[in-house]
Figure 1 (spheres, chains in turn red, brown):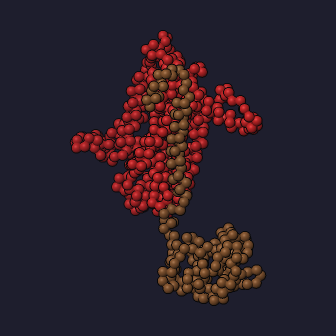
Figure 2: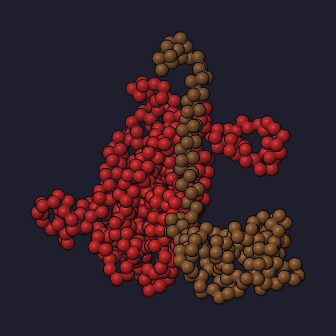
Figure 3: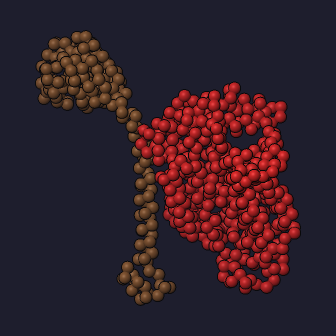
Length: 438
Length: 188
């Protein structure tokens, strides 16, 4: 980054500091960072995610000051927060809805990265760190959901820890080790609380690496074309601090609507019943952001295979930079990939929809249909199998082969070309070798 | 608004108008500062005592359980409350003091309820730095005044709980209380 810096310490104090701890220079380089001038609003979700992490850490630290992580006291202490602590209801609703907002933002951020090919060389490691952040977020969210020690907390913890029980031979031993008792119990709650407090700081560290890995190649952009000259970029501040700030403001409005007007909309009423190890709630589902994986897990009527499918579903995300063989980054110039991508988004949404329903629920209510195998063709089980099949096919078949077969559109010579001229007036020859322009 | 529209035609677009830009900056920063202040307050106020803590702020006690010349220490608002059944000698000692010589002047009568001067109700927290003074058994020698002695920094209180020696600035506090019956008090 130093080659971009024009920082000259002005005062004696700044010169003294610059020779010892160049923190002013560092901050200035971050603010002056040359950023492609054509980033659209999909790019503001990085800033929104940083905001979400900050909100979760601040509200979480405050909640931990009033929360009791003992199995005997946890549920009551959450009621104490909601009823007695000054503004406790507000802080807890910000935290519980904040988790959902965090996942809304991260899914948009991930889909944006996929659409514009932000994972392709030289940004593979940036993508891997991002996927690690996402995985850590899921773990953190799960640990957090256990803490109120209600029915959904308890049985959610039981199901997730039982996933490890599917591992052959050592599975049961691992499961016992994870929960520290015969089943999910007081020791489980204590260790999950500790990890729930630890992991956000792990995420913060990974975010620092993510931003570092971003600042080496610089931002991708909607064209996917590399920055070629200074005229392709603007300084991060004020151009993107203001744009991100505006996006965060809009995001906060949506966030506030949830917190103030429908704070329980994304939760489950059963979690207002204290944990009872003797009775499972009749309808148990994970939080909405884990539903697609839940649907994949349930789609396969075999314990070990279901768990393997679940692991592979997440693993595919990590492998994406090597699965996609296209040399054109942005799907703006890949009309076929765009269609497959749209179906991929739809498949993920369908999986989420299936995950929220019972496997035997009908897709079209009242429509009688024949059975294939164990379930009716008009059931969530088969819908999730079809959507799940497409999910895996998109990663493992479409991505590796589409890039070799498709004909991309002409890719512009530079970021400034499509900005300054009508797309129809793209320079002649741009179509000759589009794959070399990425 | 009509003025700004009229001004717009007079000022060409390529001429910067610093006052308009400054207005937007100041308006945006003010709105953001207002938002930050509004959300900061709940995060500050959550450290104040919660409703269930404040709900435990008054107690009742039957003072007849305290024999003459004895003291019972009761938990009141998570702190010690001294309920002392004073002897006539202690009351006489407290009354005999010339209040102009005191650091925190107060008559003994002002620290008890009328006609109930044998009952001295005190918050058992030294006004210096918060330790709980010990009753020193009516000792009048060695620089004591027959009342309490704080082990932390050596503050000495008399039989009315008034500061007589040492670093404490104020007398031991008398809480808000009333007799709700012949021998029952309600504190707080």
